[in-house]
Structures are given as C-alpha cells and as structure tokens.
Image 1 (cartoon, rainbow, N blue to C red):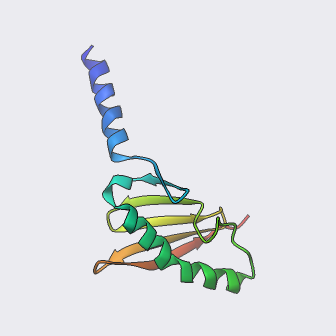
Image 2: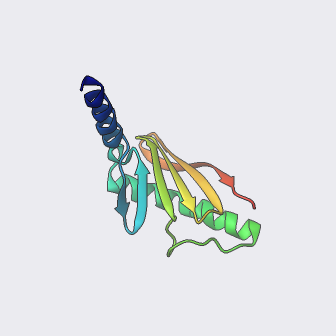
Length: 109
C-alpha cells in the first residue's frame, strides 16, 4: 500500500511541475506555471524578427499559424523554446527583465 502511495505522489508531483495549457491557440507545455501568459506572448513577440530573418535567409515559408509558433515549451522562468512547425526551434531567454532571441536549431529532413 505504501508503494502505491509513493507512486501516486510522484505522479502528482510530476503533473504539478509539468503542466500544459493553451495561449492564443498555441499549446504550451513544460513548466508553464513558471511564467505568465504575458511572458509567453512577449517571448513570441521577441522571437518574431528572428523567425522572419531565418525564413528570408533560407528562402522558405515557415508553417506557422498567423505568426505564432506551433508549440511553446517553458523550460524555466527565464527560458522558453518556440517550435515553428517542425522546421525550426528557437530559444528565447529573459535577460534583465526582457525576453530576447538567444539562438535556434534548424531542423532538416
């Protein structure tokens, strides 16, 4: 019986630490409770210029939903990963209170 309680406790802790929600139609996972909806929107806005530059440089159209990523993963209160339709993955970090593009990973086939 104690073993079952331990497993149930671990599962509850994991669900509290890792949550899932939706912001403006975009699925947000990871440590979503560590940031506000305003933080997520600010991170997306901070990343938009980098996404546009990358699309022009690579001569591609990123499969996004009206300028929004396909998925957002909150890594910590100061780091958010934005996924743009399986084509690219950007990292945005909070630096001195402002969200800034930090780098990205290009996904190739």
